[in-house]
Amino acid sequence: MVMKQVVILLGAGSIGQAIARRVSAGKHLVLADYKLENAQIAAKILENAGFECSTVQTDLSSRASIKNMIAYAQQFGEIFNLINAAGVSPSQAPVNIILQTDLYGTAVLMEEVGKVIAEGGSGIIITPLANDELHGPRKDGYLKMIQASPAGRAGTPDEVGDLAEFLMSSRGRFISGADFLIDGGTTASYWYGDLQYLKATH
Image 1: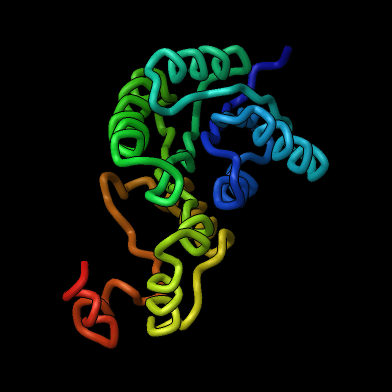
Image 2 (image 1 turned 60 degrees about the vertical axis):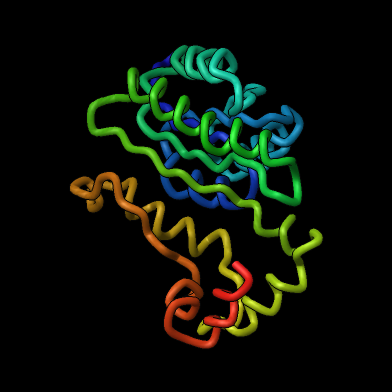
């Protein structure tokens, strides 16, 4: 087997796939998901688009599962990029599961991948949970917020992917430890614009 640079995508949803499409050409893409079926479906789509893929079941809340994913990925080559698009939201899980997955799990993921990632490698942390929130118990509030935001619409996976592509490329190599708002002006409007009403309830 020819060893290649490896990209790990944890969380095989639409945002993760959009990022993977931009940074995985010529590399081996390992798709990891809590539900192996999700990873397999995404792999089929990406393979049909010309990407080389493998899949593995991974639980972000488990250090052992994360270490297993890393070991699996290393058989294809050196890990060069990490895309974390996994996580759960309030409409999907109780608080203790959210903290165990999104907070603890992400910290463990960064720690363990940080031990083995190639020199010059990079990682992105994204969690594509908005759709569940837009159909959950708080949907009316979210829809009102989107309509009143400067952009007047939700963002798309490709718009997030465009930013991720820049950050993971050589052009973003001097950027480290930074957070980027890509929210159509929602946060600015919360502090200074039409969404200031949210301060009374959030």
